[in-house]
Image (cartoon, rainbow, N blue to C red; front, top):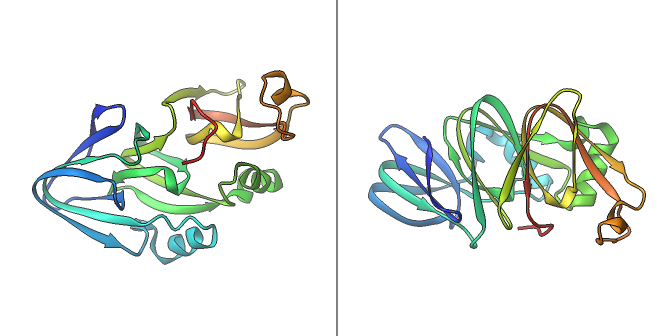
Length: 216
């Protein structure tokens, strides 16, 4: 169910009978046709464990199930929207950045400590995004939100990408992340805050970076 980008802050999805999608509650701006919106308490297709994982992580972002026949326009808080197409791989994204996604995608929750060991846990604390992150896997489209627009940076073997943890939005593919210190890095670029960290992503895939250090 591909999204049509209306502008940088609005997308439109076509809903077909027998199909469903999930969206953040309150993200519907307008719709045409016979479309229903139902509060979703099970956290998409991730089931109970996925819901528990997000609640433990304080990431219980409420979702609604969208079904029927018609078109729906989505947007939220005036945030910029990036549409990401998945072709069987896994997207790692913070739950509160999810605007809408295909119901065919399998939703889960990953403990940050399992990717990057202790440093993965530290990254969650430094970014303020918690120790868990949401995963979406399969074939379909995802609309995520960010401040100031998003750029997609490819991650290729032997050429890791270093990202300001506060500017990180999401990543997909066979990518590993670790947090590393960079002596004087923030001071050199004029953002000295006493937290000189870089998020290093290596492997094969892509990372999405927003043009801001603000959280949603």
